[in-house]
Image 1 (cartoon, helix red, strand yellow):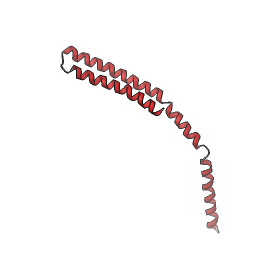
Image 2: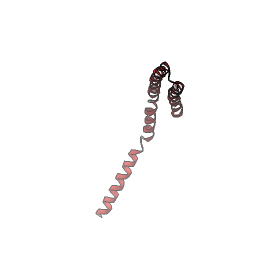
Image 3: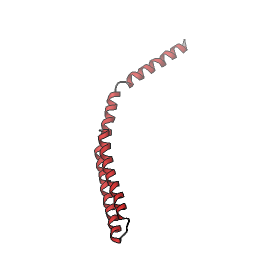
Image 4: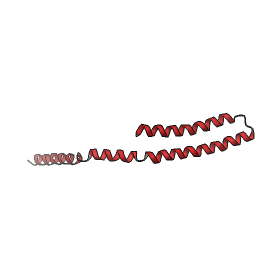
Length: 99
């Protein structure tokens, strides 16, 4: 008799906890989605700022190589320019993909 009572109490406890857990699931998912998407604007601006800093550093490096007469200046300029373009395109594509 005691085992039957314990088993029924455990079953009622399990059923009761699942009923409470199902009440706010959709609202929780919507809240999480809103929280994640709210980070995209500041993240995109941060990536643009990093791209601007990389562009300035690359411009200084290319100018230094050009002033010293290094024959490899065009390759360096292309690599720095490509890095800046990649950052800008990656930020734009990620933003359009997730929003």
